[in-house]
Length: 125
Length: 243
Image (cartoon, rainbow over all chains, first blue to last red; front, side, top):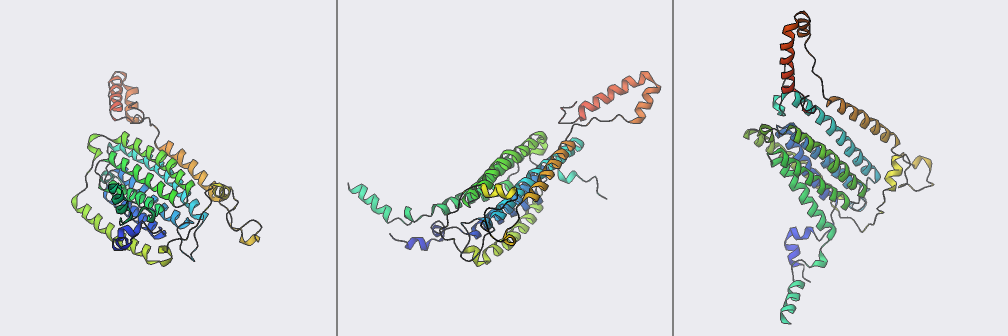
C-alpha cells in the first residue's frame, strides 16, 4: 500500500493519526470565540443567552479533554475524574443561569415590550 | 472479471486505504466539524429561531465529542440537561417573545467588523496557547478505560474509588465531592425558586390616587375602573395570558 499521497496531503494525515488534547482545545477555542462574538454582537437578549451557552460549552470541552484517559501524551497526567465532575457542575450551573436569565428576559419583555438589549437603558446615568 | 480486478487494484492503490483510517479520529473530526460549523452558524444567523436550532445541533455534536473522549456520563448529561432541558427553555423564551419586529434584530455593520476582528485576535491567542504545549500534541498510546459511571457517582457522595487504590495511606486519599454536590443542590433549589418568583404573573396595583378619587365620587369610579381594566388587558403579562 502506498502512503505517498497520505504524507503529501496534510488533511488526509489527520484521520490516520490518533487525536490528542490539542485537537479538543482547538474545538473548545473555536466554540468559545463564537460565543464571545455572539454575546458582543447580538442585540436580541436571547441571542446573548445563546452566546453564554456556547462559551460554557467551549470551557466544558476543555475540561473533558484534560480529563480524558485516551488523549494524554506520554509522561503527562490527566485530570481524571476531577475534570468530568467539574464539567457536570458547569452543565448544572449553566442550566440554573439559563432559568434565571430567561425569567429576567421575560420580565423585561413584559415591562418594555421588547427584547432588544440596547433599549435596556433605564439605569443609565 | 477484469472490471472487478481493476476496481480492487484501484482500491488497494487508493491514496487512503480503509485500513489506514483511524476511526476514532475520523468521528472526532466529523463531530468537531459539526460542533464548530453550527457554532459559527449561531453567530452568523440573523433569525433567532434558526439560532436556537443551530445551537441545539452544535451542543448535540459536542456531546458526541464527550463520548469520544471517554466521558460517557458527561455526554449523556449534556444531551439530557443541555439539549433536553436548557434549550427547550430557551426555545420557549423565543416563542414567548418572538413578535415580528424582534425575530431578527440586525446589528450595525461596524459592530460586526469590530466583533470579527476582536474574535479573530482572541482565537489566534487561544490557538497559539493550545498548540504550543508539547504534551498536549502527543497522541496517546493505546489505552482502554473502563466506561463505568460508578466512580463519578461514588465521588459525588464523597468516596473516591478511582485513585489511589483502596488501602492507600490516608493522606493520599483525595476527598470526594460531597460538599460541592450539596452546595450546588442548594444553589439549584434557590435558583429555581428565584426564577419562579421573577417570572410569576404579577397583578398590577391600582394607583392610590385613583382609589381615593373612586371612594369620593362613585359615578366617576365606574368609568375609571373600566379604563384601568382595558389598560390591564392591553399591557398585561404575557405569561398570565393578559389576565
